[in-house]
Length: 406
Image (cartoon, rainbow, N blue to C red):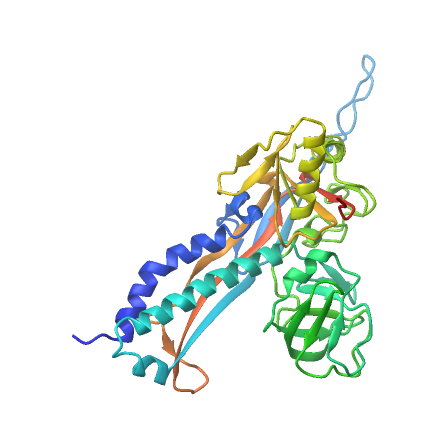
């Protein structure tokens, strides 16, 4: 029997699907270490309960005195929608048919595209995990990658100099971005191609002249991703209302925060962060700290100078390696903003999964299907429905740190 697309798609499904899923699910130390919850999904939402208040009915009284009135423990039910994540592959009809006679050509094309999909998905999920929440018109939105710090006029340079150094790693040549109005979130200019990423001045070069309506303070997001990405740690451990609960009304629903952008990283700062959760949070002990690479290197150099660090590393269950601390472990992530560090109590941070990453199959179980745009091509989709959420928000700590100097 001659080789066919169906045979190749079956091989692709069997050989690449599980490996690609595992690679994405361990794409960063947060995803690799937090709990996965596939049970508490109702429809398109993750739903869970949080203890939000204690009973006031404990009392100390004299003999025969009236006891405190009966009260109750307080709980709130939280809901948060899942994010729908996709990576698409497309092979033209000519590419499919004209390479059929060359041994392995089509299979190599599949392997190349699949390996590229793995890298792209791993990078983007790691980036989204560090994402922020921006309040626009009274609603916190996800997907915003950076804020413009200058008006580009009608030029081709977007300046984001007010961002942390590591934010420049969130962009790459060939990426498509939208610019959004800061006041409304409306798209001012869409589908701009990034042609250069300039880390020194923190600028992006775009392939099309900027719209004159773009202004300093406007937002940049990946094309089409505005308010559609997973909830990132800068949002989850921030001070904004989350999952319908305002921490200003329910104090238990806010992560502990320590440090500032002028506070250098140190073991004392990390101890302060842990004690903050133990004393002012829910009493947990955060055991996983995530920072940017230069912060990890700075802390290691300080400990070495004190003759208290011998280069010991701890390997986490997911395979990531971190710096062993007196309490917990510190791991580095290239997408973590330089002036942020996150302290997580692993059981209390969960990844809700409505659909784990898998190939979108047609009715016959094939991975490739005819292109929906009417072109002579076949397509494949790798997808997952998921979101990241703190089961209890005050089990975690957001640490602000200064840019390290050496």
